[in-house]
Image (cartoon, rainbow, N blue to C red; front, side, top):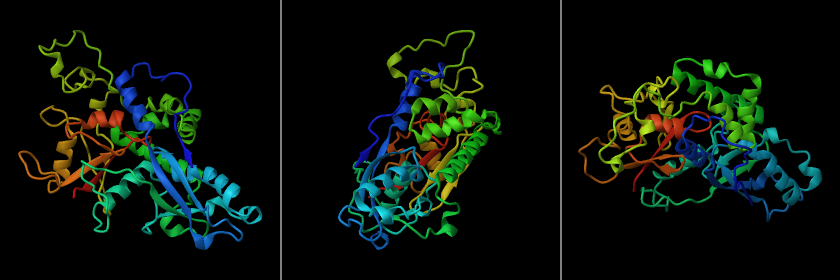
Length: 350
């Protein structure tokens, strides 16, 4: 069994203007892991393999990708399972995954998103024995089947190689950049070493290396400088969010509340992926919250106030049940995935 127990890092976060609270949530998001149980398809095991040890367990980083796990899985299989001569004949570029239910896994999705998508899909299956209300979300290993040959290229679109994964990842970053700012100048303006460095941060699971570059394209929640201090609150304990995240303050060109739109995708159980323009603030100037976003796009599952009936659905972001009053701008700055997107997975409460 393997586990990424700690984040590899060297030095401090380079973006000195990033508030400590923002860095904290970004690090918590980065260090999230999910349990995987990877079993080689018994019909594809090479001759003379040890059939009692073909299952491998790993605690994988949520922000990583399945192709990046291949070298470690291969080392285990070569050391413990495969006959040496037969194992050398296998080609990693032909390996591919499917779920225990037979669903082809999207190798270009972050592992955490694959896990959460499986969780919400299980919420609509009658055979599921796991309670999926927000009161009891059990963390169990996601069971994957590893195939060693004949990848269904017509469904995978691209070969599940590390290089193809990098291309898909960079494409997602550029799309998120455009959604945020209306152009991709921040991404295309990165030097080649920076573009390579942000991917190396993912490959090596290095928080500081990744954010040294990502801080140039992701908005900040740092307070905007103004000529006069904000008025003092009569009751400091009544703050509902950090003052640095207050959209009422002077606009910050790189701030979370001044982006054109927050890059958000909405995932439904065994259903389509929804994407729409998500302004950080509403027409009246108030902050756009997760509750408003969900009740606008899925009113039958998240009825708007003053609904007082039973819970119908729940929303996961990085496996976390996020409070409904969380602001979309803050989520975009603090809880977006490494690819720049806020992935909201909606499950059905039972």
